[in-house]
Length: 90
Image (cartoon, rainbow, N blue to C red; front, side, top):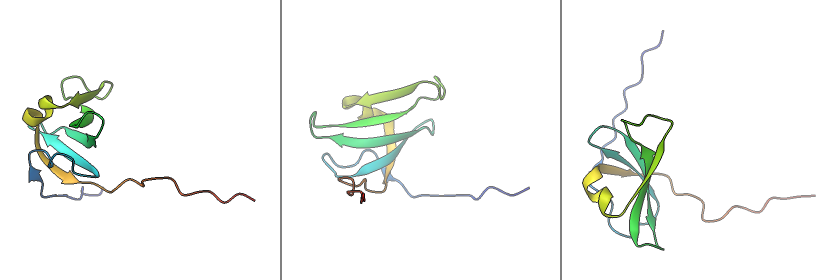
């Protein structure tokens, strides 16, 4: 039997700065994790996650003012590719 590897990541409090590029992983007070992205169309943060009370069968999208009170910390994730690389076909 193997022992789980403890992982600790220092998080920055609250939401990232408005308009910050990239994607972020946020956490709420219950320990639930949220994927955070800035929406240029709506000029607000949007978060996709699973609320602890609803379980893993019900993904939830939260936006705007809801997030300021929900997210207690965040860490920057890997940057998504801005566009797919062209494939080489014969």
